[in-house]
Length: 150
Image 1 (cartoon, rainbow, N blue to C red):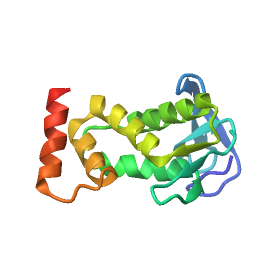
Image 2: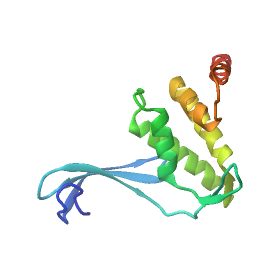
Image 3: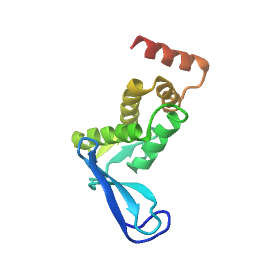
Image 4: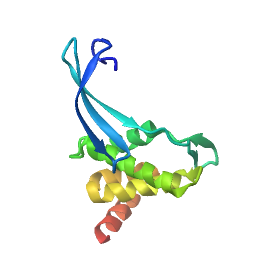
């Protein structure tokens, strides 16, 4: 694998371990030229799932888009990248197991909120504010009340 730092073609694997319930492998690598270390993930390629948006448009599922949404909600919060990867992996596993080739974006949003609720309540409210399109302070307060009562 090519080094992302210097572009050298040869690296060695320092550590490999299964992650995400065994559905992917995390590899820690070192460049043989510049000795930089980096992490790669190996996942099997899956059938493409189409997302049905609120306005009825359909688009292919994009892992990066889901990751970015969760990363924004977790910005400056004590949530690690590994935890976010695990959330995305869990959601992808649920999507695969559903057997559906299309899924509503609202179902994915609900799954993210369910996962964030147990990890970080501030990130949960942040995500909810965008996902549920909060328009005023009352919407935030309602979400916080629901969180407290759950």
